[in-house]
Image 1 (cartoon, helix red, strand yellow):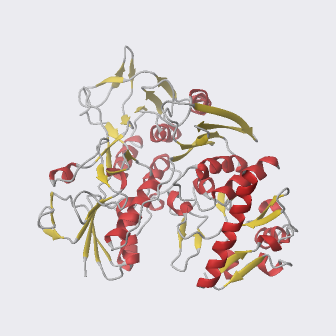
Image 2 (cartoon, chains in turn cyan, orange):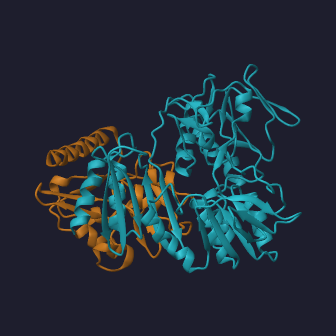
Length: 401
Length: 157
């Protein structure tokens, strides 16, 4: 009987555990995580903040689910050291031996090193604990908030705070919101509902200082200053790889743990998956990728040889009822051609590179627009779709009807 | 899942009784837009192809769902819980069969009528067949899928 130990209980770690159990009914499977909670959905935290969903709807697994599948959990414990020579983990007050180790330590929100960053009401928004802290303050007479970073999380958090009745400033360093997902003109369309609902969007500027002595009283932008009593940074993430690095596991150029197609690190028997791992020289922090990587790592730890099949980047966003989807990646340079079209009330843009569809950006999609996106997804080599041409056909058909 | 759906496109006449009976069974109305099976028609190639959830071996819809509203059962069926759905539509985007549609804000798809699919019962020509899963049948399904792709690829040049 082998013992598989998983560091991290996020979606990657948990799907690794359940997938390992699926392929090896006998193995002893242990999850060690510093989170005090069972698996919850990080994607719905902004909705939890706004009050659209309740506390118990955030969770995806109950403690009894782990018990039913014979997966042991050690919650609220941080691993101090990985000792690959003796195949053991050193915890606070105990030692845990392993045969196979899966590192799924995930990532943490980046907090830029600026003056005032240590103040009491400066937060990041990554974990359920973060969401709870913000929620407590919001219900406790906070009136205005600055959200730094207008990526999908930043936009959703800003919208959630606005729904709670706060005055909200959304600060973005680039010239548009959602800069990685949408082109300029489409981003402008998406900005409209935010502005209509009373969120102040400040683009092309960055926070240079957080003002206040004990509590936050405002932020200083380049040249400007605004008053607020809550600051939330949604400005990217950093992979948690320190323990792995100390243990001699190599990391790649993006700072993630380097793994091969079988999710194995440079040390035999140690796998990595999720936000902290780097596959094929790319570091993904998306939910679906973490889940797939976890499932592959778990089955491989259980003795299979599952190759990871990657998905395209897919982000769905809903801004005060205005839906948008972005799929794929626009190449930074080269022969890019763009095609704009309309679908029902909405509009879409297809981006092709060397004659192949590589990305789609859709605003207010109806069913036929999704099929367009689907055709993009299907056209990508290495995607996991079995009948790509069928999707292409449906795209044609629905488009003609 | 007691069986798997087997589609014979060469037997399908495109009568769309399956769409009718599906919407009637699920929503008590005869409305192809409310059907969870859709017949795709490729006129020039002479293909009528009924399509619905194929209960993929490795379902992408469950991977992308951020709230765990889609999952694969131990018996192989891909199931949805509409009460958990937050309506982000990610599963619609990734489904290679276009089998997921929206109904009253949440996503729905074929659930094989709990093991007794009505579309199969009412299919006059036998284009839809619900069979016990075994190796030979699976091979047949793979061959059929390949044939469909081949004919479409021919069309695409």
